[in-house]
Image 1 (cartoon, rainbow, N blue to C red):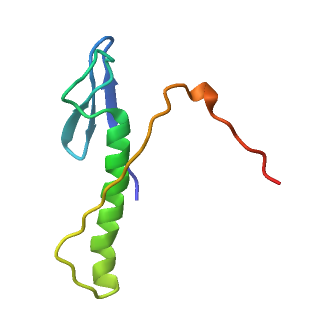
Image 2: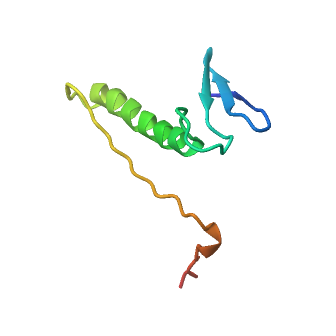
Amino acid sequence: MDYQLTTTAYAGKDASLSLGGATLAFGTSGKGETALPSPAELFLGSIAACILKNVERFSGLLEFEYESAVLTLQAKRMENPSLWRISPMH
């Protein structure tokens, strides 16, 4: 399967992405709080959407029924990424 999307960012403003005939605006301007989702929220949303898509897909393959599926993802942004530590593998 192939996927393609187009994103557009404007200096000092928010951005948008176009895919599947829809356009979705998201916050990138850094001008404080915005009603638009952030790129991190879009990322988490795409992971959740993939998981829920597979619940639907495998319900048919594995012959199980469900009324609904609820998924909660939580992530934490590190304010100073330079503090990341990578431990060597032994």
